[in-house]
Image 1 (cartoon, helix red, strand yellow):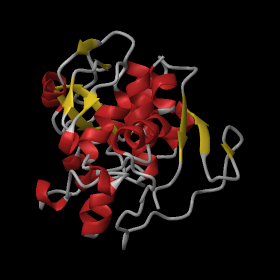
Image 2 (tube, helix red, strand yellow):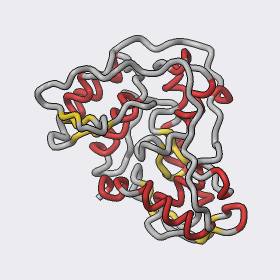
Image 3 (tube, one colour):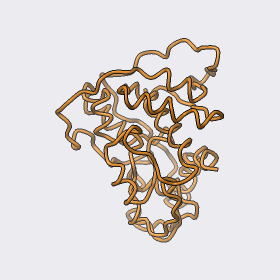
Image 4 (tube, one colour):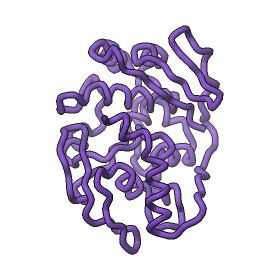
Length: 245
């Protein structure tokens, strides 16, 4: 159900915002620069790569594709990742946070002036809690900013960090969850924290691995070993990803 819900969030977001605001164009240009990921490795027997550059791979194999390396230590500053920016439609008054909330709502909110959201309903999949007030939700970076920094983003330029922090092109990168679970997770990776809800494990492992591969981020040994071990509980899980531009 979660995968199905996530699959259409970008088209749904575009239709809803255009309907409410009357905008007629979408500007998806995101700052880019140094630190682009290398070209994708050749597909293995268990992987398919389509003409649009998407990689479809079983979860266990996707985890095996992660580069294992020690974390970079020191230098992190949250302000190195500019967020939230103007989102997919710069002129609609909705920033990235609001656009994620609009896209992930199971019951659409009312969008007022300045993209003020009222009403609506969301399901926080980390703890399987339904939320009716958008102010009670956090937008979690699936791979936290500090984790991204220590896994490779320390070497990126500011434009690439901004693109990462506002990645609306990949529906697994940002997720609306209860503030309680987001703050419980903090900067921790799967070796240190996993969502408490029954049934959330496989989606979370898929999400985490997708983002790491999309942005060519490394995994430390404990993180990698935990992913490998827990993925055995998700034999039917697959990962679909496209390298970030």
